[in-house]
Image (cartoon, rainbow, N blue to C red; front, side, top):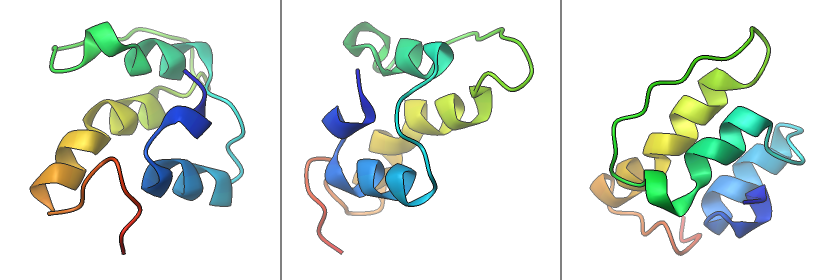
Length: 74
């Protein structure tokens, strides 16, 4: 899944920080079948695991904060 397929709030934030496309580990956690599941990720240093961790929980955090993951309302 490309970053452009993410909710606008997330894709804009990633773009502003210079991210253009997900790494393999980031793409893996964005797959629909991973939603709501516990994930164990093992990958090389510099592979994007930290951003992958954030992406895996981002939609849930947006909902909890009152921001819909489907909109970019600010």
